[in-house]
Image (cartoon, rainbow, N blue to C red; front, side, top):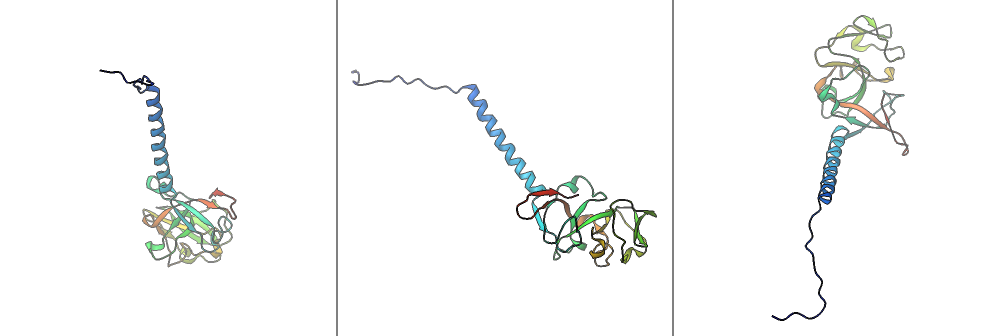
Length: 193
């Protein structure tokens, strides 16, 4: 056998280093975690809608965009003071309504003398203007299991649970909690309180 003439380079077989394998595994794990986190975030705040009208003023204004947390009410129930997004009477042809929860399941809500009463006690939560039209809440409204009484923050310019065509909100008609609102002209976002 004759040797080949010319330059020869000895090529050493490369072995995979354990630290390189660990680093690759870490990168893959981080990528998988990022994909999972993105999926959860999109699912939680995946719906964006706009506020229609001034019924939630000054908290939310007409045309303001909000992000809806759809996940929160799968693990808990709406609480008094939550701003919820719902379809009135489950009507999928209606636009989303955005209102604040005032009455909870099992409570009796009534509006007398322009004031809200829950189980006979004057409501001392969020401060509302004197309510000029009690609507169906002129008489006691007793909420059944999974029913909520909602009002707009601008109570005298709101179609809410006082209106016979809206009435109490059933839990299955709630889309989620209004979580963030978009501020105008690229000013960012803010939590809804």
